[in-house]
Image (cartoon, rainbow, N blue to C red; front, side, top):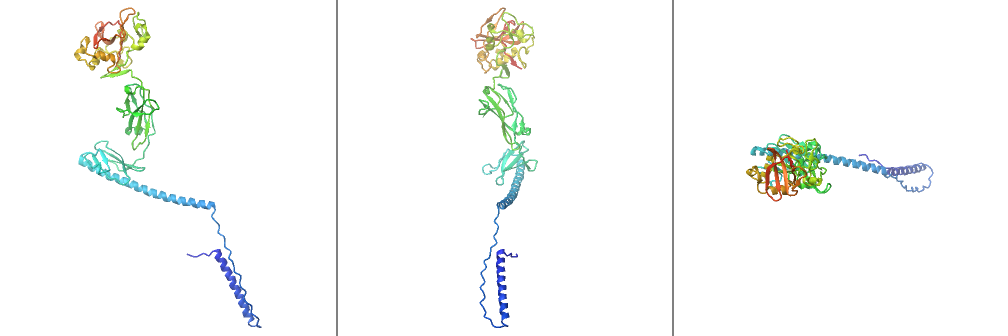
Length: 456
């Protein structure tokens, strides 16, 4: 490399040159005088020492320092990115290699056992190969994120390392998974009352729905702490029970590796008591019917396009507590078809004589007892009065009989119509506060009895 002199060095060299030239001048003078008269030779003058003047170097400015720092930072970043990229490529390569090896092992397992394993493990000492488990060894930091066996002849294996996630199936090569998070859940649909079915709202994205996990939860208040409901609560629908009455219910949905995330719906409630109660294979109304316009007990109910009712002692409060009383024709809406809807809500009907028998047999009567008349059974009357099964409690509403305003036996007797005729009369049921059994006979259609509807 060619050496470059500094200004300081150049200054010293110039001073030396001047000194030499000055010496040469003196020597020339001596030579010329040697040819003439001798002249005393004076001493050479001592040259004054030359103090070199250093050339001051400029210091770096702040701007220059900042530029240098930025350049160094850029170079460092380029180096880090390059290293990270190389390292990430190595991680991906190790995942793909583990997936390919694992796939071969799983397929060998299928050949030996006739199906793919139900589980996989990575700690072969703690969980070795069995007829249902296959142990696979992975590269450092690689983990099994998910293994599923949709059928005995198919599988899906997902391996993760940091943010790198790849999947292999029984008929694919390793493929990168780019997770799409679940971001929202729609409103829950259904009626907020006992025995109604609630349905979870739609997920965003909708593709997350088939693999998502559902958990229904309950809370005492809308914004309170929700806890998991123990039974029948892990599907997209949930049937409300008496346990949830007065409370709030929501559903929490958790995604999978493809659609990660957890979202919860807004609570539904408070849950109301259902107007219906399930008893065996039947669904009965929870209360005696109370619909229509009250008329005086001195008047007969007629086919006049106005739904009419009686209230015990002509007191509306008794209709609220015990239900209304109806003549058979008014209850049937002036048709005689067994099982007719009559004055019952849509989707229900006046129970037939046989419908009553089904209920009584469910509560413990024999079929022979149910087919008999008069007082039958053992304790079925007590069960119907006391609410066994819960929710069916039949109040002792009394009845209206004959002409005029004749009401009798409130809190002592209960008469309930069936939709089955018996000659000029109609089959009914009688409960008595002093009897544990149930009376079956044919009542006069002009009497005013209670109506308990039965769901279709």
